[in-house]
Image (tube, rainbow, N blue to C red):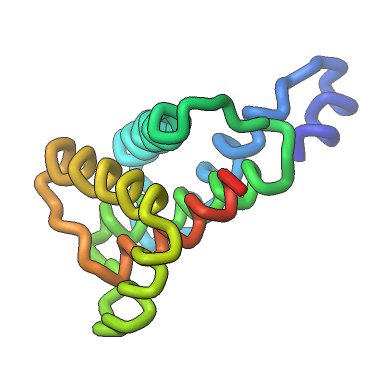
Length: 141
């Protein structure tokens, strides 16, 4: 989409805009698109990315496929959070294994969970924390 816009409009949008465009496309497909909610989600997505960078004390390349995938997954995650339609499961063994194998991803996911709790007054279930840990471990590897 970025390449098409750049070519068509003779502009140079940075690759970082890909996540914002993707989020607007995802939002447009929901039952009740809401610009206020979209803007909040974009701000939260940027904050989540900062939490990840802070947690691992290094910058993450925003021009990588891993970053693009991370942004897309976080957009779906935030959409579920805002719609109060979060993943729910009770796969304690997988959660425990992931937490034991990647404690730094767990700490980061827990920071994101705290951020969302403070921002939206929403509790994030264990299944969603597992989802966060998986995607965090991919982007930092």
